[in-house]
Length: 183
Image 1 (cartoon, rainbow, N blue to C red):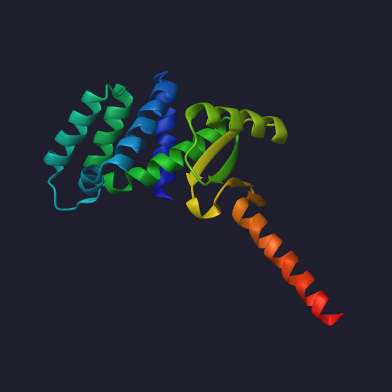
Image 2 (cartoon, one colour):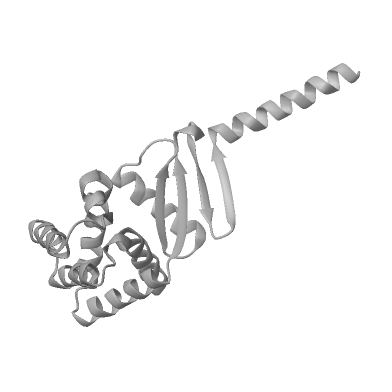
């Protein structure tokens, strides 16, 4: 996929420039900016804006955020190649490729409410110890689970959510009620 090729090219360039960790942080910051700004999302996805307008906007964002030259050049390349609309997917592909390169296991965790940085760090440490490998944790908030968490590692899922516990309780109570009627 084209997003993977761009992501791997950025990793190679960042390694060559000896700026991989800094570029990784730039992309985390950029991902957060995109998540917080509907205007930025619209600008990235809009085919109606001229190349010069988008290039100027991305340069201004990169300068204000003090992004690495490698990151800034990469964003310019995306704009010039008409691929800026893929930026969010490229960032995800970058994270996945970098995680794989580091030998990390990807773990998806769903929680009822957002975790603090300290809680996330503690969760990563616990999961890393339990799995026996470095982990890259992707936390998403899903209020419907009420509490607890759902952890997915590869094809294995551990559902320790309050919603699931309530469902099991309902099933158990329902089965006992049926047994009482039969007797």
